[in-house]
Image (cartoon, rainbow, N blue to C red; front, side, top):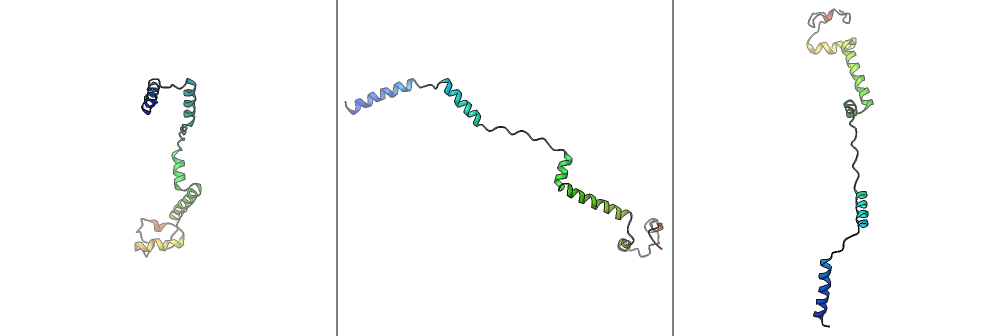
Length: 116
């Protein structure tokens, strides 16, 4: 046999193989699909949305920060409403008021906080 005869015989086998392609069994296809489905990433559950006040609380720094803000707010309101006697010169002098008994502030000098 020559090389050309071998090539023709081999080519005949390849032609026969091309005409009848092998088909995988149904069991093999089922196992491949089961493994592929198991390898797929699972969808993450959608997280529950936190209430707006919890997001605000965490955004401001949590409960300790809110406690500090609340304390500063209450202290500011207290100092503003019941001004200590030592702070009166600091608030009236920038406005140009030297006599605390005049009626510049609409009668506030009549309160018992001002001695004069």
